[in-house]
Amino acid sequence: MRQPWTKLQTKLGRVLPGPALLRDHRPYVTWLAVALFLTVAAVAYAVEAGDPGKKTPAQTVPSAPDPVGTGESEDRAGSAAPVPGVSTVPAQQPVKAPRTVPAVRNFDAGDGPAWRPSPGTKVVAPGAGSLADESRRLAGELKVHRSDGPARTGDVELKLRPAQGGGPEAYRIENKDGRVTITAPDDAGVFYGTRTLLQALRGGALPPGTIDDAPDRAQRGLNLDIARKHFTADWIEARLHEMAELKLNQLGLHFSDDQAFRVESDEHPEIVSKEHLTKDEVRHLVKTAASLHITVVPEIDSPGHLGAVLDAHPDLQLKSASGAPVRGAIDIANPRSAKLVDELLKEFEPLFPGKYWHLGGDEYLALAASNPELTYPRLAAKAKSEYGPDAKIADLAAGWLNDRAAPLKKAGKTLKAWNDGFTEGGKVATPKDREVEYWTGKEINAREPLPYLEEGRKVVNLNDEYLYYVLGEPNDFTYPTGKRIYEEWTPAVLRGSKPVPGRYAGPDQILGARFAVWGDLANAQTTKQVADGIQMPLAAMSQKVWDPRKPSASWADFKELAERVRP
Image (cartoon, rainbow, N blue to C red; front, side, top):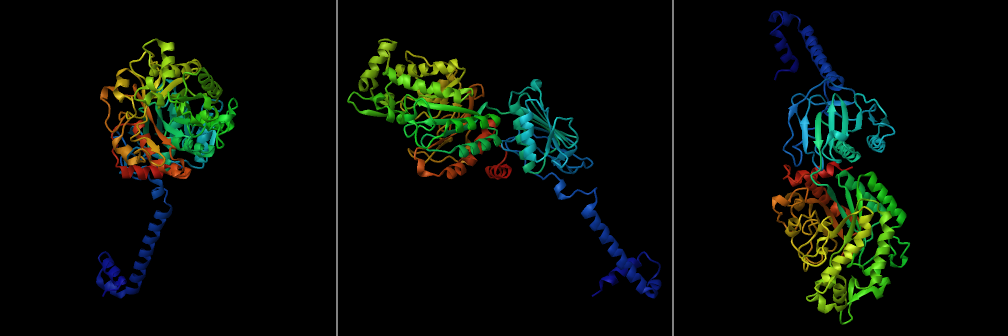
């Protein structure tokens, strides 16, 4: 077998003068070959380790599949000279939208460097402006300094542009010439732009180009039953931060039910359960939520689901003609019932300064009787005296909710009620501006979604087939999965698995959705198990309310992405 030096000599002999000369100077040729080999190796090592013109893997935007839920990204090649603290995209690699949850809806790829923060990066926004909090938050998250400006190469600049359009939650991100600019008509849009930036960085870098993004639905959130199961303020606050990363903007708090009343009351301390949130804790949660552009929607459910209140006021509990008490149902024929509930609403209204208030209205058991007027003659007599000889108990129940709503509406609240709290064809009408929180068509006297939509009512989707996480899985409920939501559900699927006709499916009538946690069998799961169990369903729902179109990525890819971009 030939030795390596012999191979080198043979190759050199092709270019050096004559075989005889090589034979006569073999030692010199050998040393020349060795020297040449070492020189080539040293140059290759230097280029690999430190040549500023060579991109290392850390400087390259990672290749990624098409963004979830879009088909609109434009693939273009980008190349530029390296910028300190900024990575560049190789010319041969197409530029793709960053992969985020929910996915960005529009991305126009650009040329130039991808962006990552460097030690010299600053978050730039006017010091005394409304974006000061957003800039401080982002600077802390990026572990860089903030500045009043001007913005330089390598910086992130936050700006309000009221005329930009798209609504208050729309935003634009431009990565051009090594500088990132996030603009929006309102603070909320800027905040969502910063969430997209952070998720892009967790996946590698922000590619060059322009993102234009906005939610399809205005209401997107989580509904928590803190009455049946106690959740600490810290646990709820953790969910707020999780929601913010998913660009969700509503937290429903159902804090009064048959099992417990879970918020401190000064007016009626006798109704408050041992485990509860203090008013200071609620104020902190409301303030935290507002800073994350989340509105807290309180619910004191009535005239049903008042068992904890009635435990302290048994004289106000509804009784049938035979004298049997009705669990959770307050006697709406008794004026003192209205006084008690109105005192609670008046006390708690200032504690929740957000836009919305939930009246409840569901599962009033007097309406579930086969013959309500025969079973509850006192309610039937009260209905006739209030609304005329043809009035029914359903009219009395509708009037009850209208009366509770009046002072809240005067205080500027947008009112909501469960769909079975809306009656049909009676003497008392439910105002058209009350939002229908549609959860089921299975309850007695409950209508399917279409009649509400045909009446022109605005509906929020809480479909109990996909969006109800009921602890212990009673009454044929099963824990919903992110996969089913991601693959089957859209905001138009209000009941069961069938969407409503397309003419009613738009965001002007179906305003959005909330994923709901109910504590029917409170000890079936720990609070940690609840947090873990709702993580992927909540992420899947966030994708579908932001963009209801069929996602392009598989469920497996989406799930992996959701895990990767979490803080």
